Length: 296
Ligand code: NDP
Image (cartoon, rainbow, N blue to C red; front, side, top):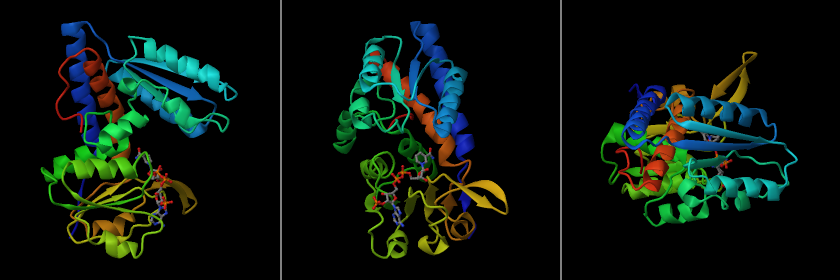
């Protein structure tokens, strides 16, 4: 079997186009422009690239982008004061504090200071609780992107066996909650799981969010399964830097029914879903109908 490639790049372009159309309509009919504020503390090179990309994508769909770059030595009090100002600013519908924060800052405290209605990353404890209890929330962008691609590929997910490898708060756990919300039978695997390959072979949907390059090989995959590779790992191969997933693509694609590549799979969906969440937050803030298909 050769797996169908789920083209996240094309899918994300479609989501961004849908967001752009909705933004244009909001501006024309309501005179409202959604605004996303991104806060970057310090000089982490990867974070700087992410923030630059987020800014460019935000502007591209017609939203306002407000960037706040703070010194690495910024105090917690100053950061919390900025978050409070953004919470109170009606032009700002979404707030994202880029993680990781420098070590002297308490990430949980800062994230939980964001107004949950503006928490477009979906990391605030209120949003975590709302998602866990099946209520309307802001949903973390990466798992939301995975869910959208899975729904598009399968239609209904009800009754499918899903295995999520990884139990982080930002990917694994919310991914499992979303799959449960769509009536999958969900298993969460992690570093202490016994016979991981056998557990994974029970999956109709296998989501890898491990952070270990190419760990999930073809012998972890049930024939015909859908494999979603969340991993982004930079490795050296043949003297060149390369980006690979948590899934060994060639061996998994030989067994799977469908698979996301790295790059060009889940990655592009993350920013597209950030834009979708900002639009959703804006619509909710103004009591307007939410765009269809862009939320869980
Ligand atoms: P974390 O490091 O926070 O979590 C990794 C999880 O994998 C942990 O739950 C850990 O288990 C589990 N794990 C580690 N080793 C093994 C193993 N040998 N067998 C089974 N489980 C294992 O990572 P994240 O969730 O933040 O990210 C996961 C991957 O997704 C990374 O490659 C990251 O770069 C990528 N990522 C991609 C994004 C995108 O936009 N596409 C966004 C966010 C992340 P335990 O809890 O027991 O330690």
